[in-house]
Image 1 (cartoon, rainbow, N blue to C red):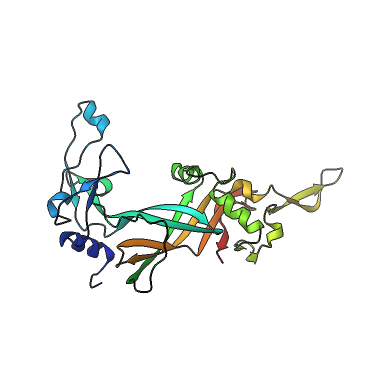
Image 2: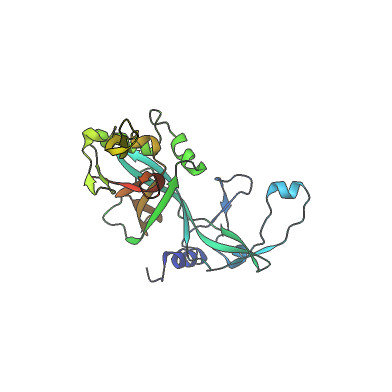
Length: 278
């Protein structure tokens, strides 16, 4: 690939007609509407006016036009599906698109947008042939909060015996699959201790007169009930031969509230465990 980035390659390949370009329907978020034209990507399409949402149009409200600043982000957005297979977290890319910053009257930044889509992946496997031409792109880190709408959609796609994504990974650890490091203590946790693994706190002990005479250690509730978010390391590749993106996930982080002794016992959310897939 004789391009500065995958972003430049996707745009130039669409312009030259090597890659097909697709447009999302405005009324159906995930349905591909149509192939834009025979020549693929075109500049006029990416300079299209900003369209107001259907609620705004139905109410008859006025809206200002916006412009898309081409080549302003150099980022590629990839829709993906996360799933657990053979006790490992995996992902499958579905479709990709180059991103643009959307400005209102060149003053107010509305956010980013994808104006054309490409690299549709209709296969369920990520296996590649030795003859495929593949290039490594970068390693990304995605943080998913357990209380976010995105996270709820992840484990509502397919039930995993009543457990969410993090709990399912944690359960596999208790059965001896994969390895997990307690970042706080820098120790590997044996599978036999996983399910009931908890923190310990020092509780003061008082005599009959109310004077402190020492401390005793008490165990908190198992940490699996307080996991707050999942951090995912993803190594991204582009298969030039098949025109698809794919990634490999070697490890993930689990965040949980941790007790801090400064100024009394305060709980802060921090990166606590690292799961390494075998």
